Image (tube, rainbow, N blue to C red; front, side, top):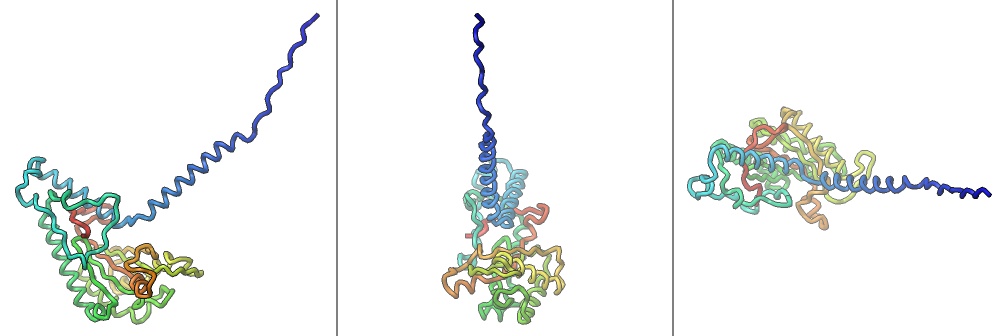
Length: 284
């Protein structure tokens, strides 16, 4: 009698296995965008200035002196670098995970060219202070400087109506005086727009970031109209991300609504990484 052959039954195919790979992909994609968002919040302009300047400083030092000469404690190159202006006039420091201290940079040689550029920035700051004296006395403009750049901070109330990016007529005199000083210089100029943290949501300006960007562009365009080479200008909008005062008070919000012109030292990195300078403390 023939043996009965056992029937082999195929297990049912799982059509949902693709969900596991899909879930892994979505998780990785989410992580990628979280990292991208975190990177986007860095102040790229000032961070790049700092990093490029440090690289050039150490490269130039290595080419001129041996390791023993750098560490023997003699000569001008072993002196600590000056911290610059008092704390009351120092510019807000660049935020890094690890900030380079004066001790770590004590062996960086400062060339005469860089020292002369610092002196020139000081003279430019004095020119601005003199030209804008009446606005400074009215607490509408503030001039700051360190060894790397000069800042002219203008309160937005002098330039714009609330929630608008069109320049008011009373903005013309202050921008004209600024342009007259800028025409005697060749520095790269960053025009930075800032707002308070009061939300805005209009068709023209969906957010404070849009408003601050538009205001920076308006000021840059007016400088071009006054004869400034547009190749020297860059307009940046920071929204309410870099306050200089507490947004909980009306006085603090008034200080945070501002446009800042930053004249970068000619010794520092420009677009394309040219003319890197030896570094000093960015701020105290």
